[in-house]
Image (cartoon, rainbow, N blue to C red):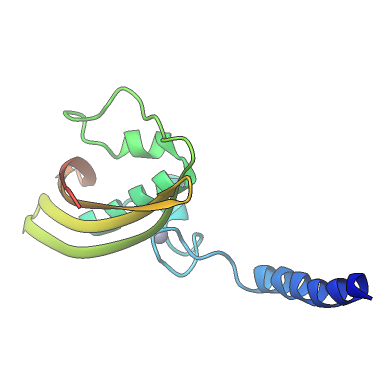
Length: 148
Ligand SMILES: [Zn+2]
């Protein structure tokens, strides 16, 4: 009898989860409605970020999806690292943009909080990052990370 009870309540749950997945696509890692309607065209190089906040969001999504190529391509040539090593077991779980300051036509700052989890522990990264537009393209320059 206990075995029958378990299968009775496990099966409908699994089925409804599957249906939810096919009906509603995954939200974009940056918090947008869906990846396809939000950061995917940027990550694929099909569109350019129109402002620093959009670039910042797409770079967060690149971290969340492990897209090192996009991170390097959107890094300012003067501060770009040789390569990107993703922290093993790090899962990005949420982004909150706190401020987007346009300093002039080609310079902007974006303050954000990114949340991630490593080995079951949750962390917050609070950063004030600088962006510069060169030949119409926005690039990430650098950031001041605030200690939590
Ligand atoms: Zn997005």
